[in-house]
Image 1: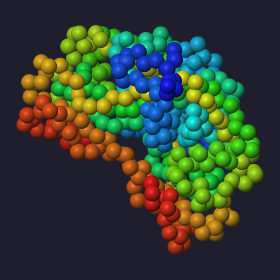
Image 2 (image 1 turned 30 degrees about the vertical axis):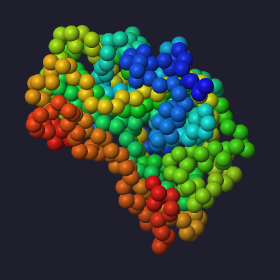
Image 3 (image 1 turned 120 degrees about the vertical axis):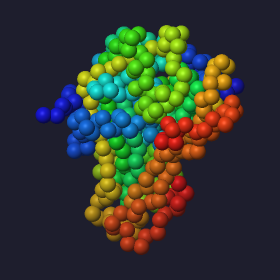
Length: 212
Length: 212
């Protein structure tokens, strides 16, 4: 049987048919993202910080400066929530009440631990590949000083839920005759033309960028 | 003097020159967003939930079904963190270490309270306008039953910080001669062509959609 990430924390209670707990749906949403929002609590005070990430199996990787307040908090093995969200369309109904968004979101729960010094560089490549596949091979790798200045954390996914809304507005039957336009407006995200910096002298746009 | 939202929670410690605490920068980032990520803690467990929002003065509004677990938690006047993030570009350096993103993020701290029944409809319009200005005037307004099924919260911004990175990669001087391409790849977000639903019979695309 396929693994389910359903649990007390992750169970979608409102509109339960939008909730999914299988690995395939979860990993697809995570793998299609560029940034996540990391939530943690310090003395009951929540913090929500956007950051890059990578995924490998049932692990989410985070990284940053060793001096980062977020990473120094997370490495203490406290509960963490990581959310990846894609907004796909505005859902414009005939009534204000039925306005909505089409979206895909993954909400992941777990605890983080430090990745060992030996494993750091390999995991940094996983994060790099999440953002732009193949870039790692094109650039100067981190030296000992840079690796030391970087903390890398791994979070084993304990519970998780995916939430997805697709399709047209769900208007009330009696509103269909109001003569009001309704439908979807897709939200598109894409990369624009690369802008070489001032020190590029004839180096061609690399494969990693062309393939974005 | 202009209001500052600087505080113990909001102070940007890493790369402090990326941190801003003025109202103008903060409100611009918030007002340009479509969704926020709301963070809250229940018994030390963080939750990070994507949702729509609106802003009016120094207040952030949230809404949803009265049965929503998030809103039922937040209305108990617990500490909340709301984050709005825009990713503007991939920053591709010559070294793995100096890869980054250009981004603008607003991290807001405060506590939420319920908006009164009398004020609900007005505040729902503020949220609607944040997503698509003018749509509210085109559609059927919420009836008494729909208003009752909706909880609206307001959060007065207590502390906040804006974080912004712009500009090219910050490569080490000795890496500039490596012959590696470096620069920015902009990330563009925009609305696609509207898709009328199956019940539209000749109603023209409304102004609110055309102006998106």
